[in-house]
Amino acid sequence: MIDILMATFNGENYVENQILSLIGQTHKDWKLLIHDDGSTDNTIQILKNYQKLDSRIHLLEDNVKCGGAANNFLHLLNNSSAEYIIFCDQDDIWLESKLQVLHDVIKNNESDSAIGIYSNGYLYDGNGINKQIPTSKPHQLSDQLFLNAGLQGCAVLFNRRCRDYMLQYNNSILSMHDHLLTLVLLSFGKILYIPEKLMLYRQGHINKVTNNIEVNHLKRIKKQFFSELGVLDNTHYNFTKAFYQQFLKELDSNKRQKYIQFFAIVNEKNKFLRIVKVLSSDFKIDDSKIKLMLKMLLRPIVK
Image (cartoon, rainbow, N blue to C red; front, side, top):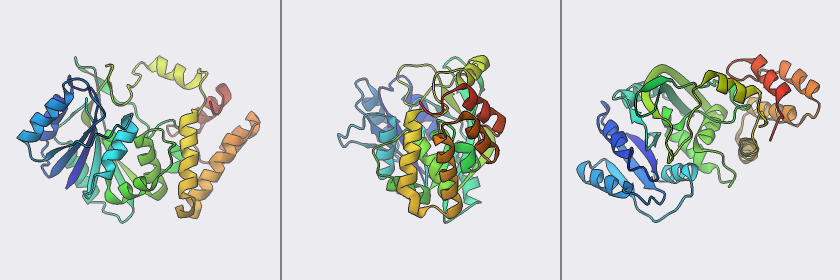
């Protein structure tokens, strides 16, 4: 069984197409849990209509206001009990084989530890498909800690053990649900990547639950290297610190040392010495140590 967790907010223009794409999945053993965060449009009525049509669709009506996508998804996670779980944005469209492909891979890699299987997708603006989603592919902590985001939550199928770790996190400091998901997988389990495009990730509308992605290559480069923002933004850095402090005693010695090394680099005031520490480590961005060092030279470390 797969629990699909959908956080909604004023999604009347998109949520029906997403639900139809879930109903059309070739893998049929799923339950859709939906929690709305105070929609003022017709979203709730659309959800109730589909709840009547398909017994696998469940709208949680508990009058809880989460105040944002991250807390809404974690609220849903608290109500999930299936063996496998996946987050679902209200405005995307899943290709019909998505659940089956992810499920087959995770079943073939059963583990007592946390495990997540993720895939890619296409950027979609409502008129047509633009290109493949540009995404980092972290395989270990050193690939992730200098990034200001985790894997796309809606791309990752994860197991109940991963869910249990996520729900242990009880600090109010939180960047996004998928950042928490990614740190759990890299700290206590493993992530496997499937090089298949299994969804349409919608871009460019006001009420998007999760972030739009910059598709212009030159603008992406400018944002990465020539920005007043820090290599790490305060929100993601503070969350990483809070996560480490929460799980310090549960981390194995290698993972603990990796976090310690990360904080030592971030807290080094001398840019030259910071670069030296990166050179002697295995920290990278997008599988490139040079890219990480350039960002450190051109931008403040945390801002």
